Image (tube, rainbow, N blue to C red):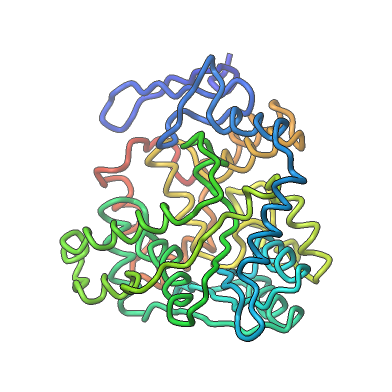
Length: 371
């Protein structure tokens, strides 16, 4: 019997220690996800998904309507929407615009190469809905220093960029005196690291802001100044109301894709067949972002394939056996195009990249990496 036919996988980490990786009996999500809790073999994400059956979604939608009415203005922007141009961004803008709001869009970008599809989708979103848009680009030198440091010390390459994704839209809303910001997914709830499905994203923003404030010493080790770190912190003014759209609607990548395609969204099917994925429409903007996602594999023994396959099982779009097969065949794979872009932008050779991964203190698993 192969290990992929067991609920519990026993493997050995690079130090020779046996690791018990429990797999959810319903979706096959591993227990090594940070914050994951299993009850009778079922992961937190599946238990959270089950609560959807008890939700009055019509009432939730009315709550969202009332929020937008509360923040609607006669003059100026009603709200700020962080967007990447992806299918979730199209869903957010769609829901806000059909209620007659006047949003300002904001995108935080990185220095990695961007796909043609991703660039098209962002332009399409802006032009189709006839909206104004701010793009925040971390200067290239700072991006390289911060990303190299985070990759080498934690394996979370885009840690600095993820700070910005949480705080810069809120900071921009402060600057424009916009009182309402709408994020898409509450990933902590959807992936099961919390069982609290709150619409309120302000605690997450505050926590990220506090993390930035307390991390100057860590970043200094990578040559990033305190001033550069603090450039991502919120101003001292009033904090806008920040909400997750996924609280008000049963969140589904496939449902969001269907809405996005009505507005002209394109996937990667004609541009790039990526290794280490099972779809062509998720996280398609930045090429090397795929490496940021893959780096969970040497840390936790799973990456994006397991994330997506397990979600598709919960939604009834994949069988458990299909998910197991995809995870076995693809979860360890590294895409060559993404890896080249990651190394080219950050100044590594590919052998240097692998040496860092194999020798890093955060690497628990080493067998078959990137094969």
